Amino acid sequence: MRALFGQLLVGLINGSFYALLSLGLAIIFGLLNVVNFSHGALYMTGAFAAWMGLHYLGVPYWGALLLAPLAVGLLGVVIERTMLRRLYQLDHLYGLLLTFGLTLIIEGLFHHQFGNSGNGYPVPELLQGGSDLGFMFLPRYRAWVVVVSVAVCLASWFVIERTRLGAYLRAGTENPRLLQAFGVNVPVMLTLTYGFGVALAGFAGVMAAPIYQVSPGMGSSLIIVVFAVVVIGGMGSIFGSIVTGLGLGLVEGLTKYLYPPAASTVVFIIMALVLLVRPAGLFGRQK
Amino acid sequence: MTVPSPRRWSGQAIFMGWATLVAVGLAAPFVVYPVFLMNVLCMALFASAFNLLLGYTGLLSFGHAAFLGSAGYVAGHAAKAWGVDPLLAILAGTAVATVLGFVIGSLAIRRSGIYFAMITLGFAQMVYFLAVQLPFTGGEDGLQGIPRGRLLGLVRLENSFAMYYLVFAIFLVGFAVIHRTIHSPFGHVLRSIKDNEPRALSLGYDVDRYKLLAFVISAGLAGLAGATKALAMQFETLTDVHWHKSGEVVLMTLLGGMGTVLGPSVGAIIVVTMENYLTGFGDWVTVIIGCVFVVGVLAFRRGFVGEALNLARRFRS
Image 1 (cartoon, each protein chain N blue to C red):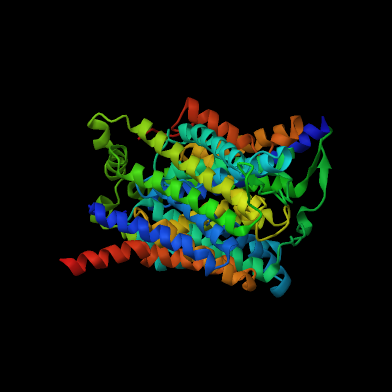
Image 2: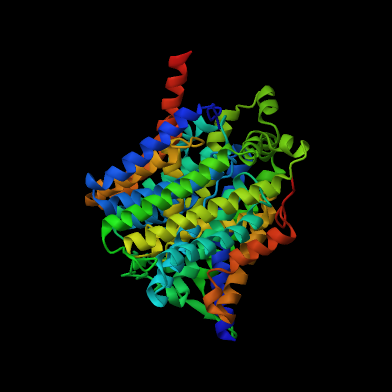
């Protein structure tokens, strides 16, 4: 019983990261029509930013939680301004290919600097330890990750669905030219949206640093699963990506308990089933 | 995507082209190291098969390594554990990749555009995990020391020259199939799907069936390349099913020129040569390949062959 709940908790943690990353992907894709392959690499960059901040500059976890996403967001702004911007008029495929190339560069650089092995990142003092719930042991940091991830996702949902800024964003997704005609500076909005989307990835990276080993490959293995999550959920709704992310994390945890060898492939099997039954995705709209 | 519209070449020009290709191929091993050439030929066939999808049907498969690698594992296992004839081993690998192509293809064509890329990437990752876990693939070590055997029980393929000519013959067969496909009525339908899918649909073509058939042909030929490569190189590892490989074939096609017959082969020569000479740089190889990718996407979308054709056209008019 304890093993089951332990695996479900691990699944819930993974699911939080799926949700955070697929949310960023969906926001970027909605407005920019770019599938951001480098999302995983930027998540890794966020984790390394936290690690480097702690080791070279003595920036604590709480500082990193704010500064690392900011740094990753800035990097995103630079990428959008200098490169992505030139591809908007072309086929969507080129955006994917460009960000794929960027992934290779970013991962290669970190690989060169830090090697293949993982680097540990200490859990902040305030969140060390945990409590025994009777049926399972709940480490405090893990509870924090789940709660904060869901909170950030919900906050993003609120901003996009309920505020004026979000209304602009949705309008831009629907018809950017009309929005521009109304006097909104769409190019700046695109830049900031990309920056915000990748900052979410950087934020997820900082959250992940104390749980997983900080290593150059941590992002790419994750991003492919997140793509599958996006296919399963469909990029149509933000709420959908949150639910799908958490749900698939749980399913993965459950599989790890029931039949461990299938844990790494279960998401793709579900993807196949969803494609058979509901090709547009669980929450998607068929265009 | 702007691809130069297909031009009619005279029969004589096509014949001269093939004659040159064969002559260069026959003479090459006397000038360049045969094992290196075999690698180039296999990757050229792989990229040409991939281009049938990307360049002529407009489908970006981001999981083509799955077909290359699975065929390589099957062929390698058949040759090593069962000791079958090398041709049979290659056919077995190709058959498995073709079936896999049918399964993945029929699922993936249910979505189009960017989702298609993500779905193929996902399934390829699943194949990667299977390659790590299945008992016969050798896990992290892969298959080592795959015997090349005797071709039809007669020709000893341990001799690299003999093996090279087999690989070259296989390349020519695969290349001819692709050339024929592109220039057949079927190929024209594929191109119309790429240019304007709703229109092809409204003209009465069953678009999904055409896409699926193109996907299966492409997967099968990618498998042919992978199976041949496993025997030629005498090993098969996880590198061949990794997503890096799927990206590499996109790079080859992009650099050479997508939607051109010779482009992918030119791209394969460039990328394999580059990797060969850069091995001394260690981790920097990935960074350099990434930079080439970025520059290619931003400033060199026609690729070498595409640019050459474009120049020639401008020169003529």
